[in-house]
Every structure is written in structure tokens, then in C-alpha cells.
Image (cartoon, rainbow, N blue to C red; front, side):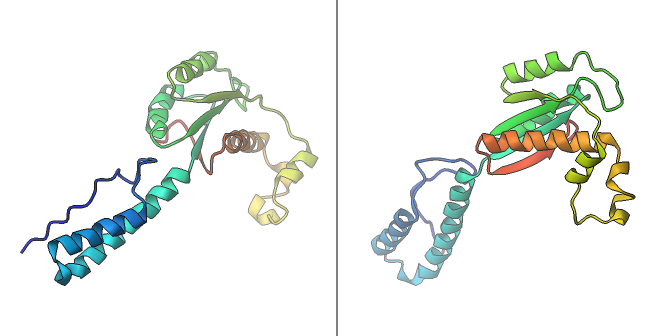
Length: 195
């Protein structure tokens, strides 16, 4: 014997909706169905369905309150960025690109800014932030390295860590801060070749 359960339709958990059925309404619908169909011997099936629906409601409430921010760290590889941003746009509330037109080794990318502006115009990226690489003083380097990091973990003292490492960290921190300013609850660092 096959049991058919007729419950009100509701949106999938990945879609945030103000029309989502509250848990009480789901429970009432199941109990009403039990009474109408006289399916008291099938109570366990309905309890199982209720548990599944309850998990759905919890997931949908969590998903609707989460806001994912993504930050791309870019100097080159902009030909891949649009494809990666298309994948992320489906999931991210806010996408920021922190870019530099001069690399950490003084190479120049003359076409990057125009490519990034196209992505903003197309709605794939919300904001672009230009970053200029810099040389970090020994005092700045020590302040950016965890006080708990040992010399062995660092491969030497903080002063001997290359500037490009600190430039990369700084770019990612700018992106994280921008996402936080926009109300994002979660954050992901991205590179252009990550899909």
C-alpha cells in the first residue's frame, strides 16, 4: 500500500522567501491530513515527514539570514575572472575585486581596469578597489605577524618575510573589510582560477 501525503507546497530551502510556511502551519497541515484520512496507523510516517520538513525550515531560515561575501585578489588572469564570478554570483550577496595594475615584482597590466569595469557594468562584480603594492617596514611586518608564530614556523624572523606576502594579505583584508561593511555574515577569498 502506497501512502500519498498531500502537504501545502513550499519553496526549496535554497531560495529565501517570505512566503515560507512556518513550522506550526506544517504541523497543522499534517495533523489535519491525519484526521481527514483516518491514517492513525501511519502516524510514524507523518512524524518522519515532519522531521524532514522541520530540517528544511531550519535550513531555509539559516540560508535566508546568511550573506556570503566574496573577494577576488587580482593582478592578472582577468580572462578567467568573468567565468569564476558567474559561478559565485549565484551564491554571493556581494562580490568585491581588490586589484593591482602593478605586480609585486613591478610588472604592469594595462588592460586590467577596463576589464574589471566591464564586470561591474555586467553586474558580475559589485565593487572594485585598487591597491598599490608597497614595501613594509620591519615594524609593520612584526605587527602583521601573529605573536604566537614561532621563528621555525616563519622560516626566520618576520623582518625577512618578503613584501609580496604582506601585500597579498593586505589585499585580502581589504576585501574582507568591504564584505563586512556590506553586512556579509560569511566571507570567502577567491582567486580568478577558482570556480
